[in-house]
Length: 317
Image (cartoon, rainbow, N blue to C red):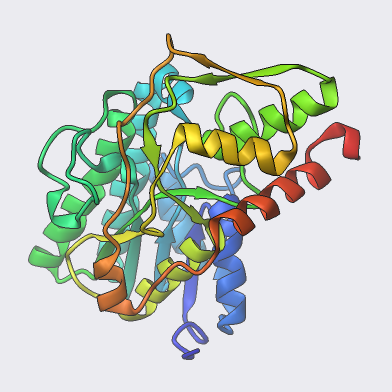
């Protein structure tokens, strides 16, 4: 590994969160001596005055902006306004204040939700403007996509080094298992493990199971983000993914097998499937900064299931 991070002051917004924990681990392994994490209690990054205070206090050379107000389909349907406003205001103001202070680099983390609902599969970065995002998460996806517009505009006008990365759906140990806001993998793991503990004979899953998704292990995603931070300095968006697709039906069957749940799977077709398909073209990340996801999907799922059983499941504590 290079010593790129060793002497630089690196602020990681959202560093106390799921992906953030893996970014912090990666920075420590790279010898970074000044890792700074603004906590919500001290800095509400939706408020400009708190952003100014954070920059004053932490004096970063690099900002990796992970912080987001985010959730699954249900949370996106309940809070479209909140998800749009808070994600937009955080990102836009953090980039603007970083520009004013002439920081060395800003790393904006976008979302696969920014892609058009019917984007050609696999999703290529150049197709990001070819249509409107899937309706249930469009406000969140568009708020994040504005950071790509801002990054490119600021590079053009101010020569400000801001890059934009598009991670696909994350999973792994330390994920969010709260049913009100969790994504599909932790939600399914919780359903299966809890059903086994309760002796339930069935679980209910949203939609038809026909939609597909791609997932990347959080530690792999963190590695991709850090490699881009070290080596990538261009205006074009870059996908961070594993490059493999699975239907929700096949995912449910895989998780029931790995958790040992043998009951009935019921599909609530009154609930939405969300975007029909998701799978990223990961060629650019490989070409630009030699990133490829390493973790086998089944092994990653097993590790996530074991973490949930050990840390969250009440019957195991």
